Image (cartoon, rainbow, N blue to C red; front, side, top):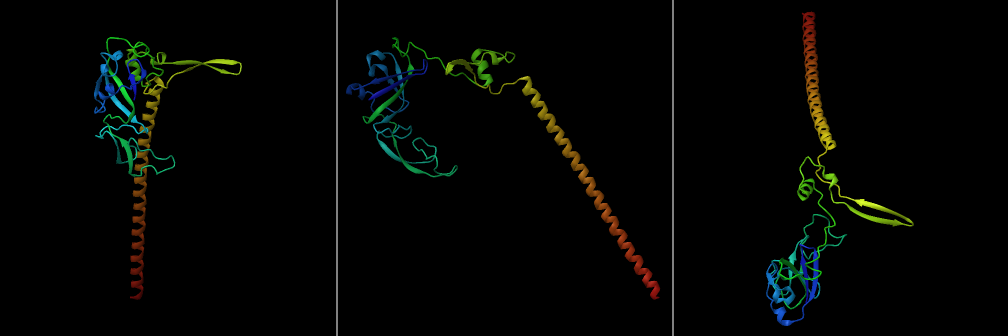
Amino acid sequence: MKLNIAYPTTGQQKVVELDDEKKLRSLYDKRISNEVNGEDIGDEFAGYVFKISGGTDKDGFPMRQGVMASTRVRLLLAQGAPGYRTAPCGVRKGASIRKRKSVRGCIVGPDLATLALVVVKKGDNEIEGFSDVTIPNRLGPKRANKIRKLFNLTKADDIRKVVVTRTFTKTKGEKTSTISKRPKIQRLVTPVTIHRKRQRAKAQLAGLQKSKADAAAYTALVQKRLAEQKAARKSEISKRRSSRRASGKVDA
């Protein structure tokens, strides 16, 4: 069985081949998120404590947390669940289709090909190339508040000068150029953004006032048209009455 050991503090990984059945028995019947002592794996890991984070069996089926079995089982899974992949041109988005898929239980057994471990506690001795070497983070934070927290800055400081920048050289033919890449800072408040926010608020207020003025003008126009119609109707009725009276006098 292969043990893929990760050390988040340094960013290193180490693969250990474990063929000793006595050492493997110390891992059997343990579940995901359980802790394992380093002495059970090898003498070089004395004092270390590992946590089981996952694994795959010999056919590549990954272990799934919550499935209390040491073998492969078939479960009815929905789209988006671990172990359920849809074809790129498959079911339309939003369709709720469930399928029965094979998943590996979360209990460690002899059928596993790879077991993933994470260092929870470091031992006294250093492991060459694993705990004594640190891989720097290639990418830094993008959000403004997280950049300030990383470099211990205040809101008055300009974080655009301290953002993590990646510099590399690019060769095209005989021409070599140096390129610097930095992330686009998210939620960064600058005078430009403040001006744009004020302009949006001003435009929104102007639009609201315009809509109110248009509504008032429309209401006044409707009242005027109704008054004109009422006056025209009234004059028409008075004309009819006067014409009837005049015709009555002529007959008399």
